[in-house]
Image (cartoon, rainbow, N blue to C red; front, top):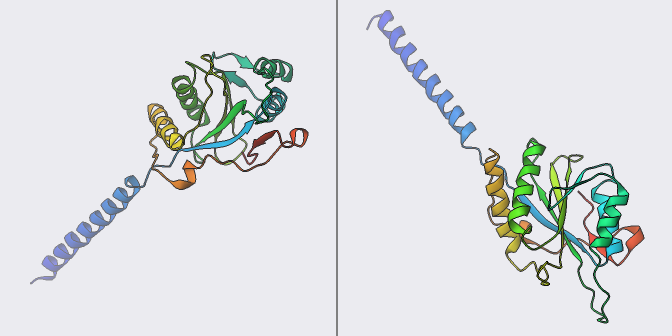
Length: 218
């Protein structure tokens, strides 16, 4: 066989190998698993005073926008404190501590557009709570993962209380994932014990010790 023929066959083979290698590399890029959404119950408050402290925390003492279920924006501590007072419940004679509000953190990995996260949470909250509960939400971008704090008043308009039953956080994850996909972000919401826990770490404000439990790692 002539050297010309050998060179031609060799060139074709090497080109084919290079093509396959590039194709495999390209496919691996697209086969990368989408990121997981995170929905976590971060804590509860047991009085209006301590809900007020929580509002201060998620608003970074009035520096961040807080949005309620009607779309109203709060940008100062005074208006947030008035809202917390509005959430106050009548005193009861029972010795059992009543959860006045539930705190939920909805998060996406680093690199996700924060505005998309906020829009997805807004739509999720409307569908999950607006029909029967007051709530506020605040976007935080001061960590590696853009996330929204969603605080829900437990006492509903119908007089019934919000109860986070077992498995509900996973349902919320799946609904949040759908809203993220509507924002053009491919995500996963596969069941995982680490996401299903609704037992927050007991981290408290100094001013509200033993009254307001929530995770301040976000």
